[in-house]
Length: 292
Image (tube, rainbow, N blue to C red):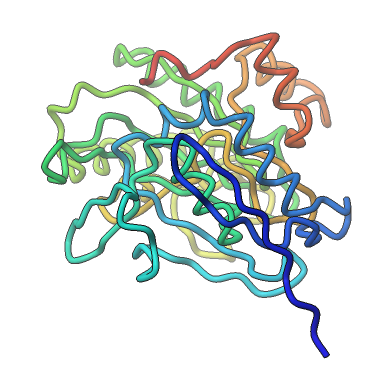
């Protein structure tokens, strides 16, 4: 006979939430429990929430932990509380994560990963033009964060020549994202075309290191410069979100000094465990604050 899941009732910002199965192991390799995952998101919330605000959030949920199956979710669950902020865009009703109560509700549904668009919605829920560009660096077989760092430096040089300041984030998985703030005057299609042109130029310049097409046979030993994350309907892992991988790493903003060291020495740049995030914030603050 299956055990009845434990339930703990908490009050967060005046909202009563029932948190279930806090003892459930979400990451077997590190024995990290759901309670520890919830504690991480609660502790990181003051830094995380501004990066989620006004961005419809999609989720990847692992009902039984990362050793089991996951599923991707766009629409807000039908049983979501009425107080939870939401926006309907293109017939999809997304949650808007504006407060710790909403964040806790979603994480309690085993949503380890929070993904966001590069655009926000206005007060009426209308989609705005993107306010940032993202370049996703995805290493193929035989490549890793050293190669991603080398490509990131090349991308920085190209975009700085266009007057853009670039912000690196290790993804918590294999690769890295690079962000640049936009003024909101370009459409998603225009931003996509800019990113694609950059990817094609770097592939032509560094064919031994960079590839812009997703064809698997082209990718061994190279870094895919994924421009497509700027397409309107695409989402990217949010900074500070956990990843549903073997161990609980988080998407982590990095200094350029770290990236430069990573480009020089194998293993100098690694993904960051969630338990190390508090120390990083104490030392560096929010390295993406200027993107807000």
